[in-house]
Length: 156
Image 1 (cartoon, rainbow, N blue to C red):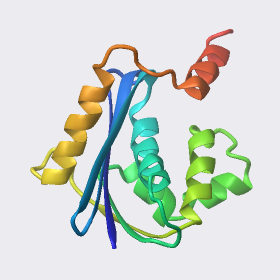
Image 2: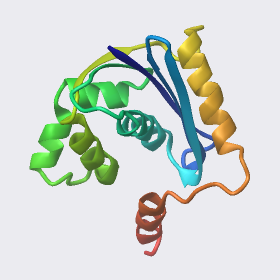
Image 3: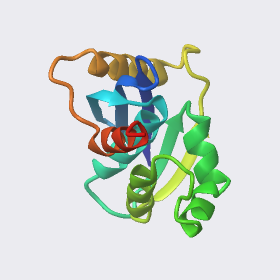
């Protein structure tokens, strides 16, 4: 069983953002994080899950994902994302990331556990530290899809 702990953060919504991930299996432990110059908290919460799953080297892994994002967990466990997919994500945000999640999720046996954020859960607290530190770095990455969609929305 692989444990995947995730968190996303943004300073402003939208604003600079980042994600933090911990992968743990037996004696193996890995941390991942990246920061973006303009994004949203929900995008970073979802990207953390995606990046963690994409980091797995073998297929068909049993993965327990721990997240404090009800947005992510409800969309998956209540199968909202499948309804959004059938409707072409009409009026829904983060289509690019949801499609990416759906692709990578097919490769593993995934279960989710919700954890209360900022409540002393050691791995969630560490993921939050990683996410916040990532969004404060210099030379932040560009969340291209988000920035292009934001530009289109603000054109008129």
